[in-house]
Image 1 (tube, rainbow, N blue to C red):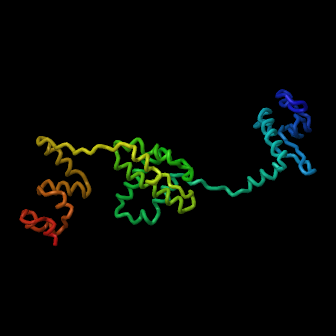
Image 2: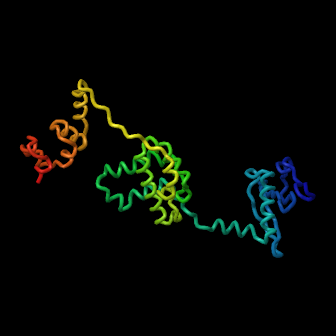
Image 3: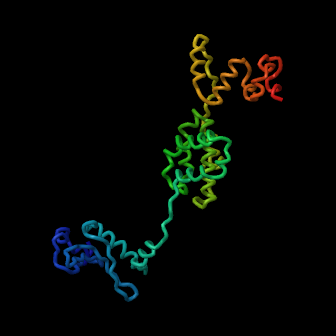
Length: 276
């Protein structure tokens, strides 16, 4: 212990009641006010001027931590810097609002590009994949701090089993980061770009493609009844295809007029040609 510092004990700090300054050494003082409150003050001389800097209440800053704070401030003074002015400058700095990845997703979803999507369902699917796979892992991160390793954490659990989902998710995250860069929330590196992930993607396995199993004939009535209960155009198109025995391309091309045209249902000529 250097001579002249660490003069006070923890017991003395708790029992000092007479108003005044009690030196611990090295510029650190315990100040006792006339209201019996105790606080820490760091006194220093710089360029011939002596100043006192409040460090906080003794109730919140222990003797040990006050000494550590004083040691740090002594180093600042030795470098010819004024810790009081530096603290004031720090307080006067405008607060920089942190934009998280989740914030960026929310803002991007309001952008013109998203609004141009062909359907509300498409917009929901686009957002849904991010909410399911990306937001839980990197949603709270500053969008400017997300790195390639973070993107890998998002993609790795699904890349080998849901390769197409992972591919689309990567592209959507790339769009989010591109938006963040354009808005000034991130520098010019995009951690979700194909270029950034090229080697990693090449080393990943892909989900094996497999056909859906055929329906057992005995189960067909029950399955078809459940299909008819479902809402949406996809369910109606599948029902239409099964009833008429045509391929999916026929159902995809079919319009209202074709469905009402007897010759189309007869199968005498292609369904799509019946539309024209």
